[in-house]
Image 1 (cartoon, rainbow, N blue to C red):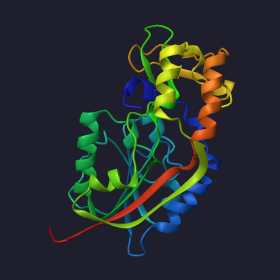
Image 2 (tube, rainbow, N blue to C red):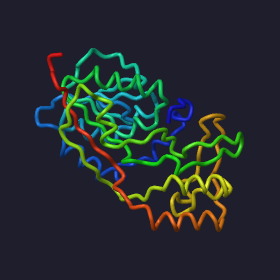
Image 3 (cartoon, helix red, strand yellow):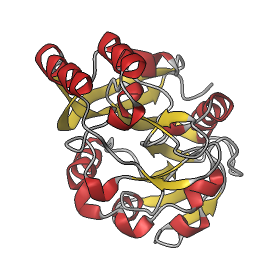
Image 4 (tube, rainbow, N blue to C red):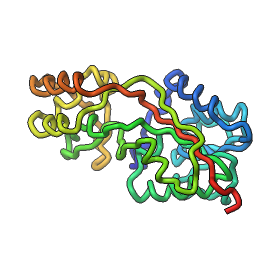
Length: 260
């Protein structure tokens, strides 16, 4: 969610620990034994950060003052691509569900900060081989088409590892609820031949979670759904040909030469 105005409007009270219990368990289980200090970049309201802080010396970083109000560890308000901390100041730099939200310039800057700030390890979690076009909606005010949760890119384990050539893989695994992604050709047909109000049916996004803010014009609206026979037919066909995959991808990497 790269628009700062929209990010500040996020309802942090609605984002609760029980939603992340499985992820938190996996994160705690896979932190290397020699880690003592952790930097959590893009920590949000600290659901993971605060748990990490019960065992480690943790600093949370986020650009939202509202989110940081919930963080109980040390914390810094800063953008992910410009963090005012010394080089290699932490045993492990952690980031969860951040990279997919960033525009290209911020993304490249954030990669640089991840590499610069860790003394030894990187621990990253992102959506697993997500197809962002699956959740496209159209703003009811300006007509802008965007990914509803503001995911701008997709990650595989191979691609994520390629972004950090000076690091070697320690561990990589997937977890979380299995989610069915959408075949690109079927998505193309859906967008081309069906109305935008029929793109995302209610069984994907519950009616009580259909609020959205357009990242272009900042229009706050509720995304409605209207049945369309062609859209439903494409959904059924996709259910036949597209397998489900666990939603989260976890990767732990280690600097190849800690003296460089």
